[in-house]
Image (cartoon, rainbow, N blue to C red; front, side):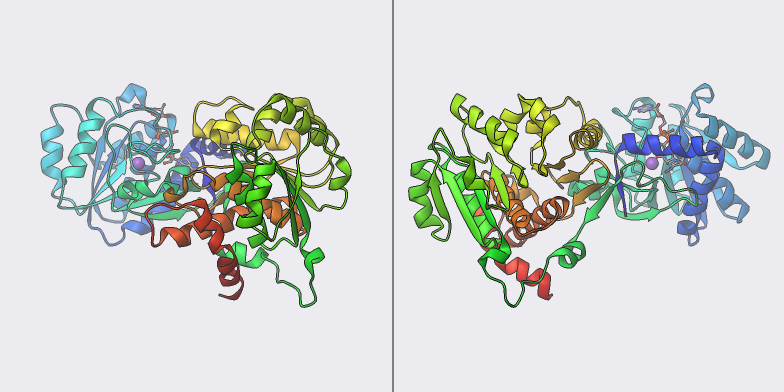
Length: 491
Ligand SMILES: NC(=O)C1=CN([C@@H]2O[C@H](COP(=O)(O)OP(=O)(O)OC[C@H]3O[C@@H](n4cnc5c(N)ncnc54)[C@H](O)[C@@H]3O)[C@@H](O)[C@H]2O)[C@H](O)CC1
Ligand SMILES: [K+]
């Protein structure tokens, strides 16, 4: 199953057309996928918009009519505004003599009255092409469909009125019993609130050439994936087997960040975690996480301390000042071990893009949306995902773009993390995630695996806490790590 943004879906359609399919052919293939969902209905009303979503509806209506169903096609688009495919199928309908109703202010009453005569109302008004509030007659039609109690409502591709990327409704939105979505899951569906509008979602793949990977549609990372990729601990392992990592994190004002990241790394199984931080952090560390070793961070930090380390975490709660900026620039320029770059180190890096251009070791960057905006510009989620892929590819890094259903890209493949919940948007959560990823990186997982597994595990632990709590705090997430790793491996 792949997940796609509206921009990616538009590119996908363009790729199919460039490959040689005609748009009429694609609509025909779409209705071929849809028809099996209507076998148990006898009387079908299909409400069609002006674009290709509407064309899917008309093509479906033609096929159902030919099967002997009673079909009423309701059109909302002015003839001069129809898409090419829509126009084509409207003409087919005229030749076949299927009953139609043009929706306008005068026919609205008739539409509402007649709706009750049908077993199912099919929403083919707008698909992933909708990009603003519903206007004019369409808004009334959507509200009227939502008010009917007599029949099932099935949406084609996406409920009309749902933003295909955010999963939030525009000014009105169809509440469907079922949504038959084509080609890929829409990004919108990851928003749990969208289920109110989509109802049950069925995914249908067109019988056409697949471009899912070329278009960088995201693949979900789920429990099964994590179970398969989490390595067994070996019989004769010792602390060296599980990696020596170093965290350059925390400062006087943000002591917690360093503590959370180091504890998370130890709980994830690191052999040795050294925290290089402010004296106050180190005092607290001996109580909060006595298993970690420590060193005071001086202006001059001897790079030799990194030589025997397997991975490095930079930046969580580091604090922004001239001294830290110089230190980060020096380390980012010289250190070649696998590195997680988080928090304030990201802010510093965004001011020194030349370091990104020339880095040698594998880097994992863990920005949230706001931090990513310091690197690139975007105005909506679809654009952000495109930019994230370009960024990861350009700089040869793994990007962990934190947000609801964190998105991970290496520029060639993209992933969505299936775990995590809304209770987790709280302080310290990012530090915990960075700690977990640094641990996997130090244990010898490939950078992409470390990022995927770490982010999945983080969300899974958060989900475990969320089962019994309304809010989720980072310390509680950390406490769950060893237990959830055991569960993952032994379930
Ligand atoms: N590969 C596939 O999955 C295929 C899917 N298909 C279906 O095509 C639609 C998308 O079609 P498109 O014509 O691009 O968009 P819509 O039908 O959703 O919208 C038409 C058109 O309307 C304009 N518009 C946008 N917002 C508004 C608004 N608020 N009010 C009025 N008009 C608006 C905009 O110009 C849109 O382009 C997809 O969902 C599938 O159902 C095809 O079958 C091909 C293969
Ligand atoms: K629709």
